[in-house]
Structures are given as structure tokens and as C-alpha cells.
Amino acid sequence: MAQSAEQIVVTGGWPLNGTVRIPAAKNSVLPLLAAALLCQRPVRLRGVPRLSDVECSLALLRGAGCTAQWQGSDVALSGSPVQSTLPGQTAAQMRASILFCAPLLARLGRAETVLPGGCRIGSRPIDLHLTGLARMGVQELDAGPGRLVLLAPSGLHGAEITLRFPSVGATETLLLAAACARGRTVLRGAAREPEVADLADFLNRCGGSVEGAGSSTLIIEGRRALGGCVFSPLPDRIFASTLACAAAAAGGRVELTGCSPELYAPVLEILAQMGCRVERGGESVQVARFGRLYGAGRVFTGVYPALATDAAPPLAAAMLCAEGESSIEDVIFERRFACAEGFAALGGRVNTAGRVLHIRPGGALRGTRLSAPDLRGGAALVLAALAAQGRSQIGGVAYLDRGYADFTEILASLGARIYRETKPA
Ligand code: EPZ
Image 1 (cartoon, rainbow, N blue to C red):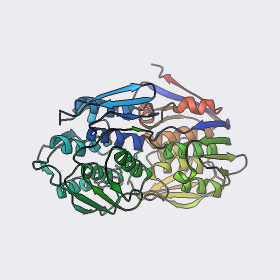
Image 2 (image 1 turned 90 degrees about the vertical axis):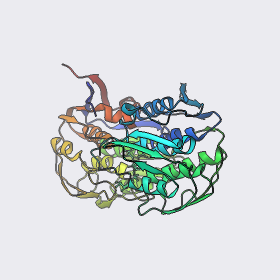
Image 3 (image 1 turned 120 degrees about the horizontal axis):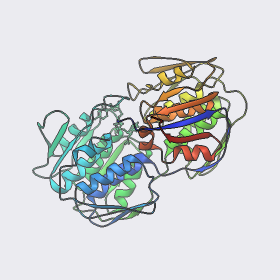
Image 4 (image 1 turned 120 degrees about the vertical axis):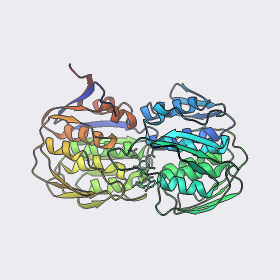
């Protein structure tokens, strides 16, 4: 990703105090925007965060021939796709462009896009998407490296598919393909993430027939066409996890509203074991840390409902501030902890071995120059800088803008000494 000329400046050592309402989830909004390609009636998504990945998705929808526009914090979508080739420059900016292929195949019988190279957190293959689509009548043309051309010459038909791994994206691709395929699809080994259930809820609200969302077996009766609806995407459990970890790292007390604690229970449980005071409400959580933090011992990520891989870097930032040892193993992505380099530059006593990040106590964190290696790693470096003594400058802000709207403003509203600036020449 091109390095923007902006940087985030943090003066650490200040506790956080205040309340934040959690915005809608990036990882729900993106598949919902792709799903809108299936809808023959207007769609309105409420309270959509202003993220660069959302802007990229709106550009893909417009490139396909749909109307997509902001109306306040809502996104209004209408029109049907007429162009099966997604704009290459735009599609190459995010992994989630793959999600737009299944709806184009359902509506136009063809989909063409470009696929970005593997990003820092892993190779990000799409074999599970493609083998599932092949079972539903899709053929892949040899389009050369980085390009993907898919055809459904006889349209999409239902199938019985078992995923060897509960891939979130593959589950969403096959859900989108099955929604308007001919006949029934049974998808076993499906991802159980809440964002998948949100997509199923949206499709059902548009007249679709999806059963079993949230479980590992989805049963979808294909519909000839879907209508539209007004829909509020679910809150962002990863944004909530990030702010909970910020409170643990910087100290103070933060109340997070509008997001059920159930959606990020593992993070909250680990923070409580580390010494934070966690008070759960129906749709809110208070996370407070005024004393010492204890090490968390061995921690593993996993597929939902286990600890989310995306929450691992922010959690590691909190672990940097603990007086005992911690380790996190990310079983989902092979290069999740590129942020370890930044942690070490701050003075953290860290090392990575394969998928495991080891964190030892005693590293006095001191501000320094840092660069975000990816979206969640960048957020983790901001959190670690909040806990460091002195001033840090964090580049690679464009990564953060992909997944955290108003991140510095929200942290500043909680009392952090943080702002964005254009890098001095
Ligand atoms: C989604 O990515 C999220 N992105 C990711 O969030 C999240 O980390 C991930 O799910 C896991 O929860 C969006 O929803 C837009 P996967 P996705 O397919 O769908 C392997 C963020 O920071 N795999 O569940 O790409 C893959 O290599 C992003 O917001 C295959 O082998 O994740 C990985 O090891 C990062 N073949 C594992 O499955 C495939 O065809 C999980 O990938 C697909 C995936």
C-alpha cells in the first residue's frame, strides 16, 4: 500500500476515560455491499463507517453499473449490474473484492476482477471460494497472473458443499452464490462468525431463504430474484476489542456502548484475567485498569467463537504493559505479527517464532518513529504508543483508514494525546 504523507503523533502516558459508541462493522458492511448486487429493489445500509474499504466497495458497485451514494451516514444503493468486469485499480486495493464475484455471476453469468498479492498477514488464497463455485456451475478461465475471470455459462445451481476450513470469505462467497442459484445449497463446515449471520439476515430480509446462520451448516433455497431492504449492519467487535485493549494498555476506564459483550467475549475474558476490571451490560462494557497488568500466559486465536485473529495485535499491545509473560499464537494467518518489529522499537521485549508472538515483561516503552505494517498491526502500534513514555510518530496511516474511522479523534476524545498531521518534508 502506498505510504501516505500523513502520520499519527502520540504522546504516551495519559490514561483514557470516557464513552464510545461502537460503529458498524467493516467486515459486515463489505459483504453487504457485495450482496446489494443481487437486489432488484433499492437497498439502504444505515450508519455505515467512512472507511477507505467502504469507498472502494462503492466504487466497485458503481463500476458494475449500480448507483451507490452516501446519504448522511447511510449508503443508498440501487440499479442492477450491467458490467461484469470490476475496475482493476479499485479491486486491487482490497482482498474483499473477491466477494463481488459471486453476485456478478448470479446476475450476469460472468465476473472479472484483479486480486491483490498476499498482504503482510498471509498469502490469502481463494481456493475455497473457487472450488465451491465450481460445484455450483462456475468455470475459471486462464486469465493470467493476478487476474480472475469466472463464467457461469448455464447459470448457478445449488450443490452440497463441505468446506475443509471455515473460511469467512468463502462462506460469504458461497452464500451469495446460493442465494439466487437454481435449487438448494447445503454448505457444511461454514464459518460461524457474526458477520456471516448478518449477511444471512440481510439476504432473508431481501426475500432470500437462508437457514442455520451462526451454525456450521447453512441451508439456502435459491430465489429467482431478491428485493431490497433497509438494514443496520452489526457493530464492529474488532473496533470494540481494539478500544478495550487501548484501555488496558493506557490505563483508565472506557465504556463501550452499542456492541454486545458476547461478540468479543474472549478478549474481555483475557483482559479480566490480566487484571482489568470488566463490567458487562446488555449492549455495553466498561473496561478499567488502574493498577498492574498480569501476563496472560499462552493465548491462541481461532475461528469464532474463539479469540478473533484481528484482535490479536491490539491484545499484544496490552500484553506489552504487563508484569508477566504472555504469548499469542495466531492459528489463522501466518504473518499476523509484523507489528512485533514496532513493539521492539518501542522497547518491548518481544520475539516471534512462526505464528507465535512471545512477550516478556520489563521492557520500558519509550516513544519512537514507527510504521504500520498492516491494518490491525497499525492499530496495535498506536495502542503501544499510548502506553509509552514520550512521543511517537506512526506512518502508514492509510492502513488504519481501511478499518478504523475517526480513530485518532475517538482516542483523543478519551483523553489520549494524539493527532494526525501531514509528515513534515
Ligand atoms: C475475513 O478475511 C476478514 N476480512 C478478516 O479481517 C479476518 O481476519 C478473517 O476473515 C478471519 O476472521 C473480511 O471479512 C473482509 P478467511 P478472509 O477466508 O475471509 C485460509 C481485517 O483485518 N483460506 O476466514 O480472507 C486463509 O489463508 C481482516 O479486518 C484458504 O486457505 O479470511 C486463512 O489462513 C483481515 N483458502 C484462513 O483461511 C481460501 O479460499 C482464514 O481466512 C480462503 C481462506
